[in-house]
Amino acid sequence: MNYEATLQELVLADDKYIVLTAENRAAIRHLPGVLNGRFLDTGITEQTMIGMAAGLALRGRVPVAHALAAFLTMRAFEFVRTDVGLGQLPVKLVGGVPGFSSDANGPTHQAIEDISLMRGIPGMQIFCPADQAELVLGLPHFLASPHPVYIRHNALPAAIDHDPHFAIGQAELVQDGSDVTILVYGMLFREALAASDLLAAQGISVRLLNLRTVWPVDETAVLAAAQRTNLLVTIEDHFLTGGLFSIVSELLVRRGVRANVLPIALENRWFQPALLDDVLTHEGFTGPQLAQRIQDYLATDYAV
Amino acid sequence: MLTQAQLVQLEASARRVRERIIKLATDGGCFLGASLSCADLVVYLYTHFLNISRDTLDDPHRDYLFLSKGHDVPALYATFAELGWLPEARLQNHLKSHDSIYWHPNRAVPGIEFHSGSLGHLLPVAAGVAYDCQLRQQANRVVVITGDGELNEGSNWEALLVAQAYQLDNLLIIVDRNAFQANIQTEQLIPLEPLADKFRAFGCAVQTVDGHDFAALDGALRDLPYVPGKPTVLIAETVRGKGLPSIEARADRWFCNFSHAEIDDLLAELHGTAQATLHSEALLVR
Image 1 (cartoon, rainbow over the protein chains, first blue to last red):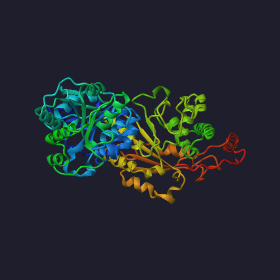
Image 2 (image 1 turned 180 degrees about the horizontal axis):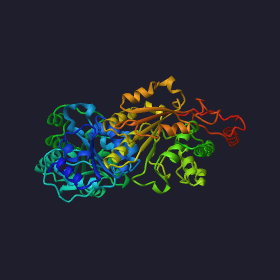
Image 3 (image 1 turned 45 degrees about the horizontal axis):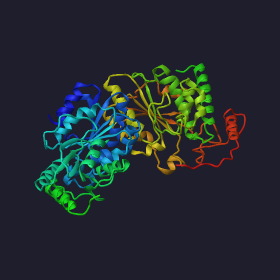
């Protein structure tokens, strides 16, 4: 089942759910005719959509609000922070084309600070599925959560057969390894997986951690990785500031754990717009490029 | 129509509410002018319009009032004390950390539906509530009080577009038209006129009323919606600082923090027994 069919099933099964969109219907185009009044398109009004979602939540509804990730998290930020966050309302935010997925749209549409912004809101949970299969797997959990949630929508085909056991705040340990841990979330998972295979072929044992819930992060899994491998590599289509690298660094410092950390992210700049595969190559995020960057790092005298 | 006895009672309630508001304008102070401009509106709505009581504060069938401009929340505190929803003694906790009675609304105060203070938020929120009431085919009325300066915020107009599109005629927007932004008259800074025409152009049905005339308010709110299928807008023409000539229309008396002696003077002024002499420096904050 895809995202739309799963959402439809969940919404039809429980009256409390209501689907909203700020005229972004790409992932939910068949729902209006099925959900009738429980599908509300507010037009190109991200702020009003979030305000209305808060109002609907005050009435006991659980709104699932859709817009492009950039506009959902930034145009409407203060509404998310003040109406949903301060109100501690269980509004679910589904951001379309986050990170590199905005491919050729250009920097206006690039949500690469969304994790940073959303985790700055107390109580917010962040779900970044590796592909559509994982999105579908985690969706019921996050919809049922009493918290506000931000979801990075992902329509990519399944990269692997995911561990069907899903819990909010639990990472998926995709493969065990003893030299390097790759920590990754969202659409870059498949590239990280490819990198991991290439490194294994070079005799480097890789532990691959698919975070699923980026915030609050699976502290146990990250700390175990720091303990069992000599290098942590964070890979993300996000600014270096505020995303996974920051999350991991904060955790390690707070727990007094020394570790080698190689961050692979966008350092203080937007990415060059192009079609997705071209973006990945241009920015150095394809599997082979990631493997090379990790090998280059391993060749330095980095050790703690 | 209101009887003479009801009018007398409303006037008396409103005077007591103003007394409570004035007493909050010391030891840290409050936004006195804006609280006084909407005091009559708030008293009228809670005593004669809204289907809500202390026992139905959480009832899904209640009417809703959202105070969007926020900083006029002393009008709510004072009215809730008048209604007996808020113990009179809690007003002594104004601005104190052991309670949650501060400069903007929050839900720790029974009767306050939602927090506000950042302008332009509660019209969208109220539209969501109104949409749900219609979806459930419930007859709740959803009232939003906005400031007029607040109408500078684009989110209000965005929400009106959506409200008219979904024919939210259970939504009543009351503009506390006291003609002031924070420190400057609206028409001198960002003119709103012709305001009624603006709302009409956004698909609302509009009337204008004297926001301090209970009989007129009662008349303007008797038959709602004004036009089926359209959100209702009532522009309530008010005076900032109403009831206190020393405060009325004074641009510099937006946020007020007076000495206890000045508060006594203002109370005397409210009752028409003396003219207040105010020495405290005006605070221009925003």
